[in-house]
Image (tube, rainbow, N blue to C red):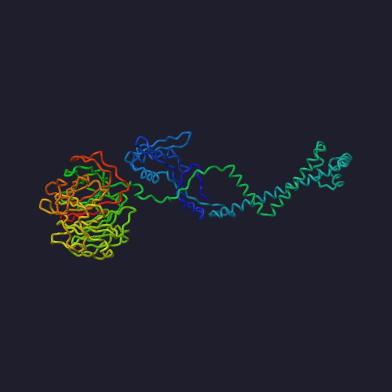
Length: 639
């Protein structure tokens, strides 16, 4: 059974509602409009050719226009009805930057383009209303048809036997025609003729009346043959009726034949298709485009997201542009490039972790400060977010690696972070004077790279770390050279990648990962950058992948510069690099991130927003983030 077929077509979403209807007698069948996309003059349009049953097209067009006008559905520029004698056609024209799938999902959610039909298979059974399953419904229908056909057959049998009785009387009269005529002529009245015929030829009253009512034309030889033929046919029908009444299977054959005739007479091509996907409740992410965004978080806890195209590329050493407004006593501490559907894990200095979806963050203007994080997650006022990890949808990792500023590191199975309460839970047990500074998603065969403020780095394999529970402490990852030194960055080291190191004063360079030898954990590490008074200490470091095209650097005062990765100087571990960002006095670099879109032509030092931002690839599955501790020392996270 393929489910109901509506006269206006449409698409039934899934089979669960049909299955419930037929199995339990009650169900909910969801029907969607039939749509497709068309592109004309560079603009995408949603074309609607079929609507759910009983939906008024004019009302629907008016409703969509109202939702677009009130900005409850973003991305619609025009709605028009182009239906004609050839069929229905409703055109929903989209804006150039609209996401067609998101707009279509919004239309299904907020308009009658997706409608639900609640089914109740109710029938009178023995004069009582009952809800029946499909099998019971069919059985009662078959029983009803058997009763109808049986009653009809008995009625037809009674008529045939009555006609047989009359025809037998007429045959007697035709066989004794002269005697019948003589009897009638000798009778004084019609009543006497009837009595005389019954007595002389042994007829019933009905047969006698039929003979008296017979026209003279029936006396012809040809008419006599018709009476005999009709009698034979009646006798044959009587035998057939007896056979039906004696065998219920013969009656069921008639039921089948009646249904075949109905199908041939009224059956046409099915109009409503069945979709395999069930029509569940629309989630927020179904209505939000999965576009690349930049997430920023300040030291005071203000967070927001912006499309990454807000920041266009500039030449190395440029001034940058304002990424967000900050208070005098506040500074940007985190920069993360992710996608709207990704999950964000917020790690705090006290070793706790919280979770949010990227699209749950406020989407504000470039210069707005955003919303305070305490309004989004149950973080305590004394806690500071020191690391943010983006978990892309559909991308899995084996372990979560976390590190502290005193050089400790821990590996925990990722399963323990799959479901994080909004109120958070413990990610690592810390000593009183230690802080969690970084977190990373890793596989068992990855290498870990830890960077310190004094320009030291150590590389070792993830396999060296034993797997520990969330609530346990860590082990020694790197031995710090002095009390003032601290870990600022935790990275993974894929093949053919480079390590970008950026200092507080805006100097930076890229060094091949292969220049960093693999050691045992717990060592002193090797030099990664020559730290001087001019460069300042290492603020952040991150791995540059082959597909990373544009680099974003943000300062404590909220200034963001975006540049082509190819413009960064390449050099060995011991050099100090070149200036990447021109900072105001007292400002310092705090975070670095990359985007994975199509490359841009560099713009020369412009502080204005441009129209030439790149179109971003949809298959980007990695995101980067940078963290900074309260003393102005940065730490970068990349996933």
